[in-house]
Length: 172
Image (tube, rainbow, N blue to C red; front, side, top):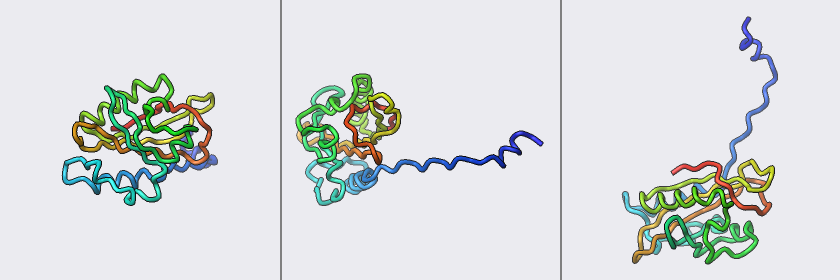
């Protein structure tokens, strides 16, 4: 008998259910529905009624420099998490200093490629090693030279403590 044979009889811990970040799939599907083939959706095509149920998680940000975006419109979920109105602030102010460079690189890829990005976010607080939120960044077509992003953030269940985001992983 091998050890692997005996492992079958040891009690197994149930696998953790994967976290579901509510609303992100709806925002992505809405954005995809606005596309015409390979073209990006225009800012003018976005209708808040198409995002009903997730408006508290959605924001619109404008590029103000290389790797920097300023939040123009933000749902109440982001404002509640930050503890203040985030309109007019750079998105990077919600991130810990050690994650801002990676955020800038990811934002540049979203604008220049254009690419869609998903970023898994943790907390900068001690013991905050778990996943706190997931951020979705979707590029919008240039409107008069303005580069915009439609973004959405969804928080993990039970993660209500205010903190700065720390990037744990990203996909673009």
